Length: 168
Image 1 (spheres, rainbow, N blue to C red):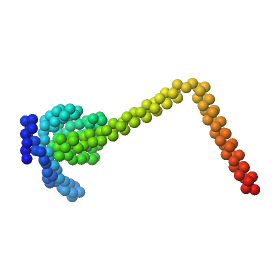
Image 2 (image 1 turned 90 degrees about the vertical axis):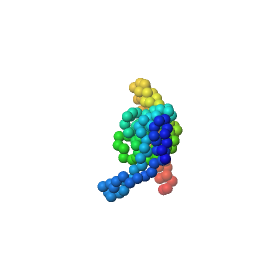
Image 3 (image 1 turned 180 degrees about the horizontal axis):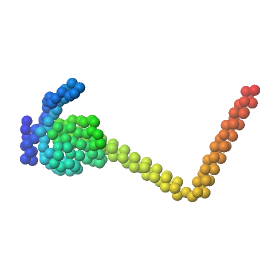
Image 4 (image 1 turned 135 degrees about the horizontal axis):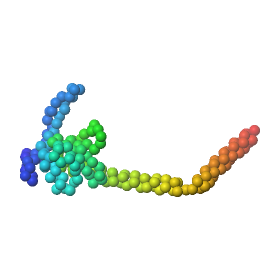
């Protein structure tokens, strides 16, 4: 069932078709979206979704949390952007990808990023505080910790001796 949208012919549904048999003897199927790069770019622009890679069949599409995905226009295959693309997922087209996958976990990603940023700020503040201390303050803290360890050892030694005396 072909439809014409924005002057671009587009097949709304796509079916799996035999593509080849790989070196392991497994049958490989392929689903063509019959979408052109122009159609996908028009869709992304219309929906105010940022992307990179104009003119190629692969586009980098960014979700609202700032995470990028590699999207292949001709097949609807997509993956999280990384150095090696070892795992791909399939969508039925750009609309299916955007509605079902692109921003699915964006809110969780945003929350995790904010938590990480907050913890980083705390670590940086703690480091800055440590670096701002004078040598005398650091020595005083060291001696205080050392005295606390000695006091704890003495306390444990006394408790051990007291139990020995009671058991005799």
